[in-house]
Length: 139
Length: 275
Length: 134
Image (cartoon, rainbow over all chains, first blue to last red; front, top):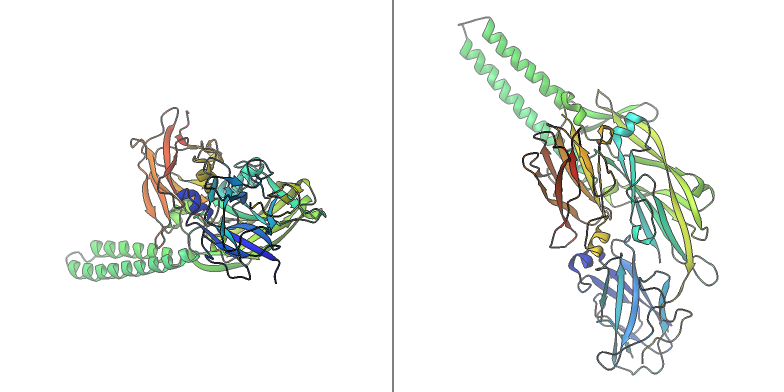
């Protein structure tokens, strides 16, 4: 069994900045051995098991625009609580951050645990955008 | 994760040809302005190359540089490669039609003038038309040629066009748009010290005419390094031959690097923060 | 009579992210040897005189992104640029002829762009056309 799952996000940066939304301009895919649902959309539900390492990687579709993951925060059981460490880097987000972690053993099976992924494209007032629809699912 | 750096060179080709140098006639722009590049839009760009390394010191991710030379006074590089070809065919067809019209006029002129004034009018009319025919033929056969570095001249079979895409004749040749400049090689301190490894690559992206220069960077070698681009620009001679002129231009990269760390913890990898 | 090319290179990502073309566009022309100033900035002052033909083209820094000039607003007394398309393509350019020499202080103009998929246009009003005495 593979111990490593990659969640790849492809972003159409110019479209996202033009329309000021990531929804419809972002495509998430993973290589989970457990057949995740929502491949290629912003609502990818990655199937995983405790002990597996999950790594998030982001690419700009035009390949040369700098885009980084600024923050990934798991949304809490209560509707507005956001738990999880803030990115340790400065607020700009940096490609020095490696976004990976081990699926914890206390994850409830079958439930979708949504997370908000914030991306930084360029610098400026419109440059940080997020999607809150992807999730992890313990199988 | 790799970062592609695009470096655009905008060259005022006419001025460079007149002055014999690219200095003061070239402007550089890259896509890393917000990430530390200094001097965008000027002659002196220092491109920021921000690398990263893993805990064992090995390079994390690639930094790749891509150069795109363009000319002010050249047709936009976004035009399809075949732009000069179909238009030439259309222009030729127009010329042939024009020729046919003129021939028709000759025969009509002959008939109307007939025996009234055997000398002047008929001769003038025919001479006038002959003059126009001559101009048409000059235009139709005026495809441009290119001279290579060894002096050999080849016919390219394409028309010389102005900046609006219209054909240019010998009387308005000063309005001709230039061919895009080409980088022929990259050398200098950054290459000698093994900081950058340049090579020419084929590209499916026809904006760069199918070829471009690219280099990967060893981001463990930090510091500011100079590199020299060898650029070929083409001057149009009076007989519609593009003659190459070799010039060089020096720019810089500033390489930095920092350690990678986990985004969730700031340190090493741990369990995901899911409560 | 000269054909003067004004090229604008747009850093689309920066322009869209910062919501302004200011400092995110680089304007250049081929008339520096006759006195154009501000090349490589957003405040290009192109040296022109009566009768010169001016051609505006644009280029995106990210070569696959879309950028085109949607409008040029300039005092009609001096120039009336018209949009044209390169035959057989969907790439446009703007061309206009100087009706008279620019007044002292120059003739400013506003360049409006369509960038990426963005519905609203973005514009820059810092470039201008100048004459001998400016």
